[in-house]
Amino acid sequence: MSEHPSPSQNDTGGADVWNAKLRLATLNRSDLIQCGLVAVILAMIFFLFHFQGNTTDVRAFGRSALLWMVERWTDDISHGGDYSHGWLIPIASLAVVYWKRREIAAAPKSISRIGLMVVILGLLMHWMGAKAQQTRFSLFALIVLLWGIPFYLYGWKVAKILIFPAAFLIFCIPMNFLDTITFPLRIFATMTAGGLLNGIGIPVERVGSGLHFLTEGAMQLDVADPCSGIQSLMALTSITAIYAYFTQGTLFKKWLLFLCAIPLAVFANIIRVTTIAIVAEAFGMELALGLYHDWSGFIVFAVAISSMMALGTLINIDYREFKNRWKYALLSPT
Image 1: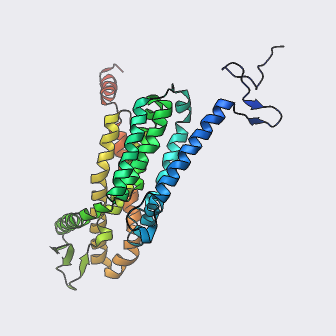
Image 2 (image 1 turned 90 degrees about the vertical axis):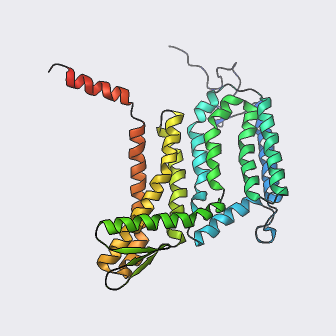
Image 3 (image 1 turned 45 degrees about the horizontal axis):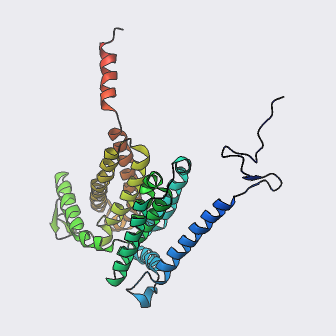
């Protein structure tokens, strides 16, 4: 009968890592010290950004940059929900880290001086953001710190794996300055939709961000700020980022698919505006701006997601191998 190794031994010299009585994993002294140091560092970061993170709108949000960010998500929900997806970003980022846990555990680890410089840079960025009363800049500094601390403690191999989940947290930060592009998006969507409607035989005239029907009834369809497409743009780019990260084979293909999310979101919004106008012409403005308007966003967004997945499949195809297969199939004797 062969003997099996005791579960209290491992490949690192037989250190006790399993309590047979309690059926629980145990940690040695060095592991406990490391866990304690990491806990202290995370607590210091929390207190820094919670009590000294926000220097603007202090009466409304207090000193916490974290509460400032969460309140911005909530405020934006009442104004169209442009950044309401921010609640899901930290969960998705942690899910990526969990997915990569074995790769992180297997990576060689060492203290990195460059990582320490990144930590110092993150602290300087936070100080500059506080002095300039730019809370968003301080939140960028928080992301730099969350990436730089593992970089310092465990080295480049671990930091390289954590680049994407750390960078993905950028979608948490409310980019309210992007609201300046809502008007150009509205104009572009209205202009393109007007051309499509005239092309299919529905005469309309574009006036600013509105479409005036030239048929009897003189209906008017105005593309407001929530219909500019910025909401779809932010949500689709975040979804495309994580989809491209897991499905595309090379860095170039990942970036290519990610950048394609922008025209896909704009195109989806144009289709939505056009179909609303078609429903208004066929069935009346009440149905178009009521039931169809409320549900068309979900339908068109689902189409945009499907288009993104199809485009990702096309980008990820090895066309040289695909060509060789067809060449072999056509030229091989039957």
